[in-house]
Amino acid sequence: MILHLPNLTLRPFLPADVESLARHANNRRVWQNLRDGFPHPYTEDDARRWISHAAGLPDPQSIFAIVIDEVLVGGIGVHRLDKDPVYRDTAELGYWLAEPYWGRGLMTQAVKAMTGYAFDELGLFRLEAGVFGWNVSSARVLEKAGYSFEGRLRKQVYKDGQRLDVLLYSRLRTDEVE
Ligand SMILES: CC(C)(COP(=O)(O)OP(=O)(O)OC[C@H]1O[C@@H](n2cnc3c(N)ncnc32)[C@H](O)[C@@H]1OP(=O)(O)O)[C@@H](O)C(=O)NCCC(=O)NCCS
Image 1 (cartoon, helix red, strand yellow):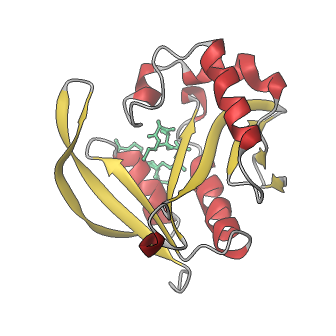
Image 2: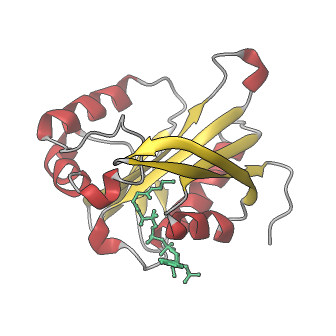
Image 3: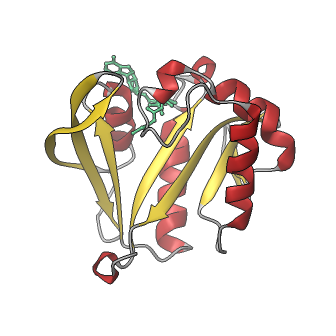
């Protein structure tokens, strides 16, 4: 599946993305805002592992490369939480963008599109995202994309030597968003 947005494209990860994925993901300022499953330093082997993981996921596609001018500059996806059936149709949203592209409204565009896709094509009902307390811009992206702030999970994570609060945001399929 390919989603063409005004300033970027969301498409599947491809083997040819290894170099650009490793180059852009290998950034401490990106890593600082993600769980430790996102490696740092981020090598071409890490990129290969991720791309083959993405290729092995079941259809319909749940993770996308963010592409500008045919070069991978980030990633976005949803991860279903339904290992336990009580979390049926609930998923976590995750995303990152290469630092040179920050502050141009690109992730807001990507999150809005991914959210629509997740509700309409994946049949999800609830999307949630946990933002580390210091990540003001990600919280803002979620607000602009119609997500609601649900609460502050006090000192839920330990990242880069600090215990941090997590800001929990969610959007439901039934939410009315302008
Ligand atoms: C967070 C991230 C996705 C934002 O992407 P982006 O494309 O720069 O976001 P946008 O440009 O769409 O929106 C950013 C918003 O944050 C605002 N912002 C940025 N820094 C800010 C600050 N220090 N204080 C207040 N607002 C800030 C911007 O002004 C903009 O809001 P506006 O449109 O109302 O002015 C990107 O920085 C990133 O990938 N960071 C590393 C990984 C990450 O944090 N992933 C998310 C984990 S929850």
